[in-house]
Length: 233
Image (cartoon, rainbow, N blue to C red; front, side, top):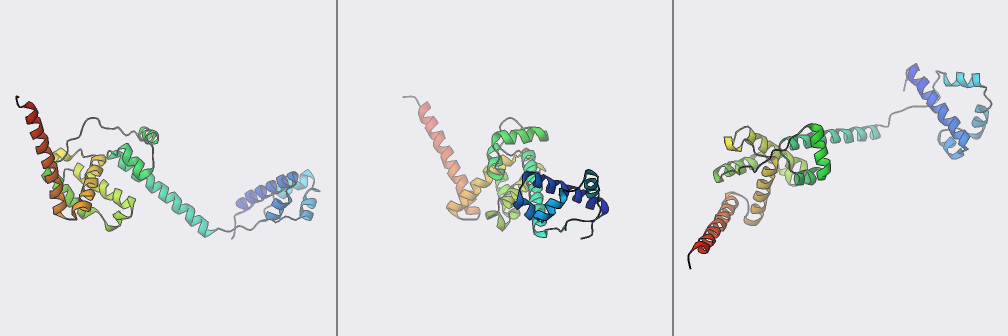
């Protein structure tokens, strides 16, 4: 590899400094790792201050430099993954991710999540969000099965991407104006319920209807219980 004179100068200075420091420590094993033998070290110690300065300013390469492509590519991939992870995390926070969601998908505890939110200037909305009606939820459920990809079952990134997309579409008014504030946390709650229903009742509209029938039955039971309590003796 051809190096510029400036880079050669910098590398030579760094190498000579490391060699002389290793000689002072008497670390012969480290000297051999650097490619310096005992007679080389003895010769370097004979140099005067002027000769040593000239050695450090030498522009003739004293070391061979090459790029380890495997290491370089691994480091770059890791940095890209970290960058993509940070972008996904901020996106999720802006869509109203809960602390439990951030811990599940990004491994953040509540303190870390709060710190990132403060640094990003992300505000948490207060108050209870209005849940979708059965008709709106059915539209969300149908759209979920359109946007979710098969690999989402094995990839948390794909699963999160599908939920973010569904939340963004809801906020764009696709499922009615009262769902324009749907949070990612609420979307996760809905999706988790749908997945559990499909596990219990199988895929398709049957599972969706079964859950609503179960919820309606529970509501009716609660109403009957309240009426019995209010009934005069």
